[in-house]
Image (cartoon, rainbow, N blue to C red; front, top):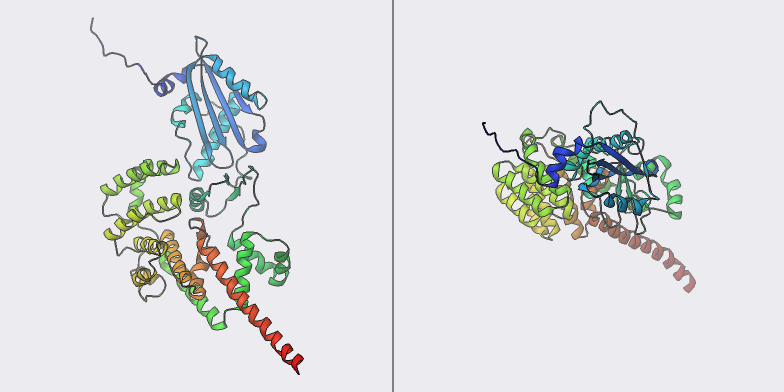
Length: 450
């Protein structure tokens, strides 16, 4: 008798779930009672072994945007474990049909994937507790987003910058954000600068001013301060100069050129690093990113992607990385912009101005006919605005500031630019108002002395 190769028996829980779970019959499924109202579904799928034990998957599904946010799995455990879970959540959960559970999980997955979000890392294993997603499972309509519009919910203490940056790319700005306060209650949604500005223009400045005096959001304060300053402080010549400089940058044809294609070929290689960034593991993400960079040392745009992800998580440019990138590609417009942003953040203002020289607009980055990315535009405008504001020169900061806020580029940057500009403008407005009051009071004083 010929002996065959020894049979490999899975030993880890993950391996056993991947190879055996779908052979077990679905025993029961549970879901939270308020899932339709909250659009946040807690789903438990239980399969039963012949020995009476259970294998189960617990899935947290955000139907507003993020899909499978969390999941855990158990293999071949006593039913006592299941009893403990149900006992603690008996008033919140109810039994449901597997078809409903399956549709909710996979609808959430697909919705999240459409907007650039991957499921929780445990789903790679937990998916095998579910049936294969095929035509054998009847389709059920599941409500997603706000009538199909993705909604990002940001817990208290978090910024949501990474998620908003992803959504800005995948939706073109067609998404909503809800921030939560300390008590877990949603705060009023902050509108974009462009939305408030457009409303002021439609309503009329005087009418909107009456509303603004009664109640105003942080964004309304920002827009109205800008408009009052524009009307009261700048001369006509200065207004014309701001418009010329704004148009010189925003209408530069290099912004709308197509990017260089080589980076697309590295997408699969970058997946592990991007997943680590998404999970918040910055240290390991950096290691993975540097592996790809080392394999393609002549590709500057890989450094751009790396710096972008680092800046989203840390709200600042990484010193070591940006210096390495600039030493390698000092003439590349994107890398030069990142380096300028870092110089501005570190307070090396004279070095930043020397880096750009006297070249007008985006010629300060390059005079070549090459694509200038949104990342480069953001960093360039941030660096220039920050540099001029450090000198308390509101006029020269204005065109760069306007590009940042009107194009919604402030999702990646700190609030430094916006609120420094507001504070300086208010100071100038107070000085102007004080001058008007003084000039009105002075004649009165003279009259009384006569």
